[in-house]
Length: 569
Ligand code: ARG
Image (cartoon, rainbow, N blue to C red; front, side, top):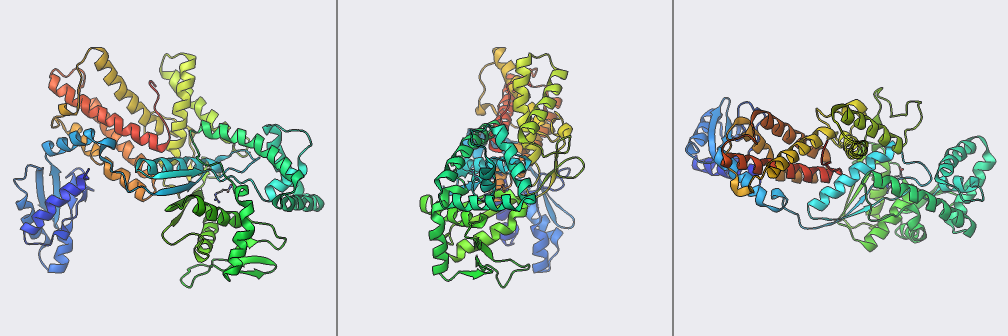
């Protein structure tokens, strides 16, 4: 389905032609003065510069062509040469009616591509912490957004399950089977010990090399560690409603590493530098220094970049993805520049397969420093979730009479929305402050507010139905009757454009901005217009059809963002 701005634009272009001007000046965008108009065209200002003519006069000529068009309530030329546009109520509601009849409310699927989203990135045997939370949340929503656009999305958790971290744990592992709690204590202890005890550090280092060369003893312990850790990780990701298609990790490609490195050598790309094997990836246009990509340490150990390169080789072999999206902390940006450039140089990834890294900022506490527990330790994900659920639970039980069980269940759903929306509503690359009070509030730009709006609409519709109201459909949609109703429609009709835009820019925060304005527009409409007590049945059904569309649009958006709405709140 065409986008509203495209439709308006085609009318404007026609008018420009009729006024003897080039149609390319007929570009239209949302108004940045919503108090004056709904859409605007600034083309006459650009035309004036080229043609040395008066912009206001040209705008007047274009506007007069559209004077009697049934599509517009008004088209006005205003100084210094803007064209201010308001849609007619009929045209706007007709679009709303059409979009409610479309699959995905007018969003058109793209030519399907195969896309790998590498996100989550948890490290085995270390508790899932806040740093991994952002990757999981952002990655899941990008994966869902891509799927909504019709793509074949493959999510890979790409675990950190290889390398020195595992050598350290193996060296300290007791002989009996360990629980996850025990396991999680081993890594910090081993890593601290390695700093003080050079012998221990050396033994851990040797264990790493042994593991990487397939030593059965080491592999046995490694498998035990994986077993315990994976069970715990799966449980935690499940709680976040985050789901992976592939549970691969650095270890998955261990066997591919020698061949991959040989290929780099054969191509004349990898050379020795201080005993290590490196690939030079600097380019003449670089504004800052890009150090060589180290693919093998002097002792023969593989590194982070090594397994990422081998993983690319494997993904090409298995999936030939058109696009790769990696989601990690932005401090890893250099790593990905090095890996991507090496992969291109070595033709591991062909030119027509794109590589994208989305680097996210830090989640900080109210003090502006990286988020910590109250006692100053690293916050575990489970703790963050339970604190959030508790805060939501308190708010729910404060305002409503509700059974304990229902309150707990609702708090879980709403709590997850609070965390995810709080994260996703910020541009990914920015740091943000995790503010429990703010994120769990039922008012303002929060997840709970969005859910509250959805629940409100659900309950209006349910009330209507249970009072025996007759069925309503999109055919009942009539032109709007009030400013607030028109405002709601103006928000609704942006839907296909917003989704497409959020996808092109891989920017879930644009979706959050959108649903917040939809929710606000709905709530002003709700406060101004009595929906269920409207005496005219015709009008009432028109309202209901519109608010149902509002709810459906919000539901699709929150699903893409990775959370769901409860029945009641
Ligand atoms: N395990 C890594 C970390 O904790 C993240 C992995 C990201 N994915 C990748 N292919 N490098 O930082």
